[in-house]
Image (tube, rainbow, N blue to C red):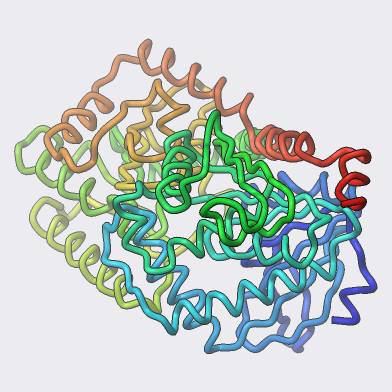
Length: 493
């Protein structure tokens, strides 16, 4: 860790992945390119202004990459063995926490080996953060893979101000209580000064878990933790009482970047080309998702197929384009889902397609952002039918690109975005009849209503962008920083 200790930063981000992807040229030369995603865009200015560092895994097992600089950021890799990737990442993170936190749509696996690996890897990340952070610095831990890091880091570096943001839902206690290590997870999170969630309901679920497990007081989003040895709180991590704040901070996108892409003529030309390649249909419906059981792809296919069977939609003038980017393909649940989705596509196209027109255009691979914006521009109706989703940024991306104030967003009420994008057509994806009605309403909605709804949606997305999200969170975290006098008093004790 000696190399890390040479680089101390006032602001440290701790995330499962580094914000760059490895690129190996034909001659073996190694370089790094920025990863897609709004989190990097939101935090880059903060990191530059505060001599920031980013701690994370490179994405390659058994990679012993030394700390390096890229895009004006100092990056500190945490090496993970192949076994750690299997047990911590594919195992506990994505085969235990992910399904549990998404309402047990798939059955979680409660494995002690998974848990032991999760603890060990979280310790690696906490050790790295403790070594990198400057005295009284700020550390912002990201997401469900690292829920134990705040407490571990608090024990190592009590001088730090620690934030945590949970990008996925936090479940109701009736579900969360299934987890054999529920106390340890909550204790881990309570090591932070500020815990952020996507939705108000998620923050409420967490606070209820705190009350049920530890019988401490919570009021107005605050948890009052007693000092060590007091009450029923056995591991307070502090000899003094502490206050932890749990609030919702809905994440967003870099809306301006999407608007800039829309203004490019090549992107507009590509949107027109997509419509032509699809046969210039009257209506293009679009779904863009990772291939995940939480996204409700099966439900939208079922509703669409029934509308075709009932003659309420016709493949001659309506097409559904489904982008399903590969996801966690080594996990058995995801392999089974891919097989099921592809069988469904084949069945629907076999029953309702024609020589000239497919009912569903299904594409199982990712696309660069320019192509995605062209697809958003080409689509008349965006279908977001998630069964459970922390936010769903695709809904916001579609809205940001609709500079003509046209298009219709059909949005699941179980996605975090539904709390903000109230002018969308909100649906319960489990209600297939209701979903069918909303899809027909979207297809036949008068232009004036489409424009009214989309203008309101775009205003929300453009004003509440990812930059505002990060500023709101970091301002709230800074407000919790102890004053000099408070630090002096604590040192005197």
